[in-house]
Each structure stands twice: as structure tokens, then as C-alpha cells.
Length: 211
Picture 1 (spheres, rainbow, N blue to C red):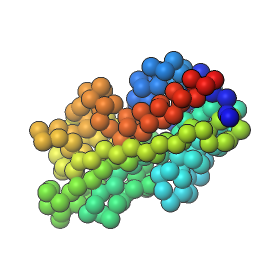
Picture 2 (cartoon, rainbow, N blue to C red):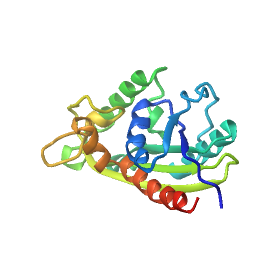
Picture 3 (cartoon, rainbow, N blue to C red):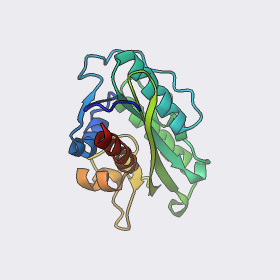
């Protein structure tokens, strides 16, 4: 059995993701850090050539774990829109192919999303966020995997400032609130990443109990 450790590296440069994951896993007594925190922020990014979110999460977790010699959690997440046959899917982060910063890419991606849905009635814009997570030990072996979904629909009128990516366009409740209008606690309780993190937490808690 792979030995469980109390520190877990999150393979992302996105501080929002780190905060969301830390909020859940911190309750287990796991010290959650980012690649930047351990001085590994300049590591080359893995080639995410998987055809599913789960495959890409596994690729990232295993490569970063071996490179840092630490236990690593990686996720691959994105938006799947029914009217677009599941696009942008695994290409969500760089769908538009434009921009050098996260802010620029987010703006270009959202502009493409609204353009692609311009002729689709809002009642037909069902979508979901999907998140796959993988934890790999320092030797690259897979320790735990999980999956989470967050269902909603796309609006052409962005709202809210508590989010990133497609959040301001993703309507999540009958009151018309977007994911970016939810509080951090509400988002953790309902989101795809929150669901995947809680599933991972259950698996890690069992390992901690046996360690």
C-alpha cells in the first residue's frame, strides 16, 4: 500500500483552484501547497493529449509527482455544452487558441462560447462543468481518482466576480445566479470541483486512518 503523507501538492498555477481544494482537504489535516509554494512553478507542463478529463488528470498527476518526488493532486476540468456536442470539453482552457495570460484566454474563450451559441435559444443552452481528479504518489503510482459534475445553462449576460473561466456565464439556479455570483462556501458545496474534492477526501481519509 502506498504510504500516505500529510502534504499534498496541487498541480496548478491557479490560486483559485488551490483555495477551493484546500478548503476541503485542510479539514483532514492535510497541508495543501501549490507547485509555486515548493519552488516548482517553472516545471514544464505535461502534454495533455488524453481524450477524457480523467486521462488528462492522470497524466498531470503522475508526471508532476515524479518530477517533484512528492504526492501530487491534479485535476482536469472544463465545460461541456449540450448544443455544442460537448464542446469545449477537454479543450476548455485554450478553446479559442488566443491569449498568453489566463485573463486573456478566459476572455477569448468566453467570446467564442457566446458566438457559438448566438443562434441557440437560452432554454436550449444546457451545460455542465466536469472535473476529474487524480492523486499520484512520488513514484507516479495512482493513489486515488474521482469525478464531479455541476449542471447549469449558459447565459449571454455575464454576472458575478467570484469566479474565473466560464463561471460568469454559467447559470446555476432558478434565481438566475451564475457560478461567479455564488459565495465561496456555496460554490464548494455545489461545484464539480467541490464534488470531486470531497470524493478524493473520502479516499484519502481512509488511507490516513490506515497509515
